[in-house]
Length: 219
Image (cartoon, rainbow, N blue to C red; front, side, top):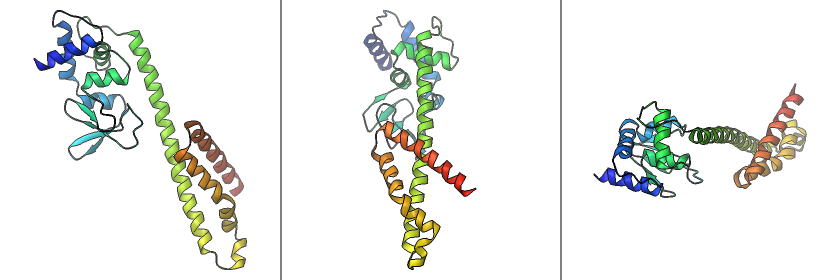
């Protein structure tokens, strides 16, 4: 009974006013056949298991460390306090009404619900979100690769400079390179940490070009 009231409240919020339980039954069917974890994995959010629970980076705020925990029937973010079930999650994630979220879940997981048809607007929103997720994933991968490379190179330059004791050693190619580029490497690292998205993208491009030029000189 409590679940039905919650569903009716959710539908009322979205502008649906049904006097029977037909739509409520559809909500129950979806929630009984699709777990929250299944949906989160299906939509590419990569849950990480810690102890007996799964955690993800919260998609509803700028989360740097996984702060959203996945329970059996609900999610909760300890960062932005977002909370809800599988239907709420899909509704919020794809910017859909609750009923549209039910339609999307039934379509994506192949669950037949009488009276539910695929919605072109839902599919359009889904494609947009999937494209955004791919771009975000690609950016994160390139960001991590560039950041790790720069940090290791900065450490290497620092070590090279600390080992030079004799004046003659200052002519060594490795020492000259360390002196020439360490300040630039430090600037790139700082920009990746604190710069705007555009500045971070510019650094990633600059570092890629710089690495390619270094490889050409070594041939």
